[in-house]
Length: 232
Image (cartoon, rainbow, N blue to C red; front, side, top):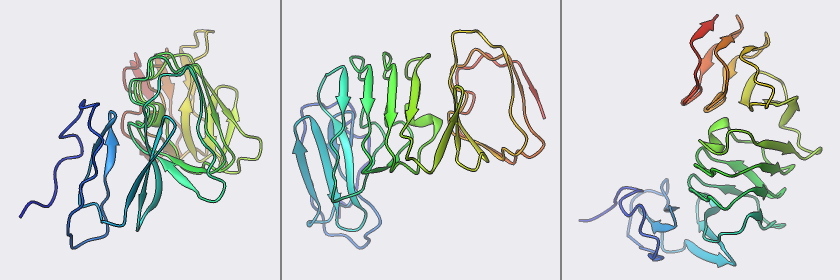
């Protein structure tokens, strides 16, 4: 009996928009769009795909609402605000969108998954809404080297100090964003316990001094960074 296939089995098939329904024994899996291609893994029949303009949403009966793909090519994108629902932007929802220069994420978005804005080479600014409580540096994986993240002043989950995004309690360093000042050494503050996924991607830093409080370093934390020295 056929029950599932890999989430990237149809990677790059940008003409396919098809929902596959299966009988299944678990309610813990769901389908996603990868690279503008709808694939599924044990999608329950009551799940639904909705295309709203250039945005493709997927509603799962167990997990709720997801923005799974942006199929447009605009440079300045304002993601729809679903006032009555909270939702997640999934990985690869904005994959290799080279035209994208600015994105505004509404208050109804609560999570931005890793690789949501994957390799958006010209992204200059991301405006993060008040409702976002889950994201990492890898949410903007290998996007433009010098870009800005602006946090809504009502966001209670994250803070921005200079060019660095932290969780509100400053225990997680979410993203270090290079400035054009060419700083080559950075001292991570004492009290930081976690370096987020993708936190120092493609920085200009050669030396990073890590705090004694550090307990965890995430995936891709120093991806494509020229760092040659770490001090703990």
